[in-house]
Length: 406
Image 1 (cartoon, helix red, strand yellow):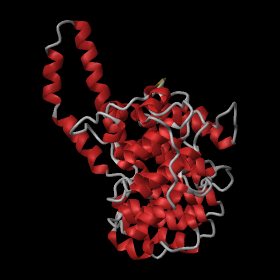
Image 2: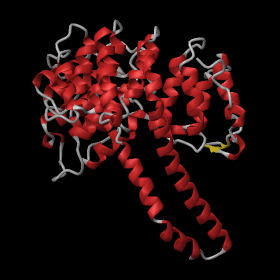
Image 3: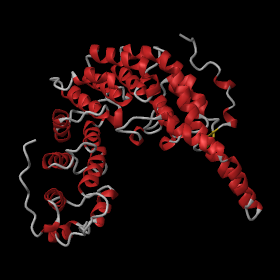
């Protein structure tokens, strides 16, 4: 163990680096506050640092330089809340996980994007040279430079975290369930390291007492995408522990398996998910939302039973200004039930399909709520009213349908 995880911190030219709010010379202060366990205001220093170096998932130029210090702090047993350091490493590696779920992360896409940008240097130089005046020329130069810096930061940040995986593997056997879970989450995003990660994750799941941590390990196995993991993952599909059944079903869909048993588990969890805990970090711990994302990619997603489960899930989220379950469930449901542009615009409520009618009845029966914008977008495409009173007229009379046996 290094006596001071932040040794060499002042040797980094932070003032020459940039993050989302300008010069990165405030990064050392955030790292020192994290090491000290300070907490000022409503947010811990790890959240404050994340807001600067990976703001809304955008990895900044300064992000990669924080990796060695975060790794050493994560490995230091003297520090508290070490799972927060690993969570920040996840953000530095991939940005926001909701941008990559339910499919996992493919680093080749970002590498290809960087290579393309580098290969377009002549085109950019020509575009800059054709600027009508000096002000436009300077703006174009800065714009092109920033695009390349951002693309390089994405790739270099991911690579830096990947290089640290062997050192961080020991955290999978930590005494802290939150730290074990966050480390399993981290390992899920590096498919090129799957050959070494999969045995570690299997060992974690097999020996794990915490349902959330074990579920996180199974989800990670699914996101890594190696078919060799199927027998191990499948063995948990009939577990008496709901978190393990859910995780097995989710992971199996990522591994190309969506048979009736898998779909059944997903539907049941959408209707009645386990309680959230800090030991399942994917998508902020939302079992229901992840189940919806997985179900949406199966052929059973628009069956009456699946739709009814999503409506039960939505009803469970009412009365909250913003709830991730409501956002993702509504997005999945309306994308599936009101897809794209209709071949023929329905002229009346009776022209809708049975499942569409069920969804519209549900909406008409709710108090006015702040639905995600894609709900209104989907209804507008299908010429279905969006206001509650208009919906009631459209339906004719709201009759609460009997909910299917889920």
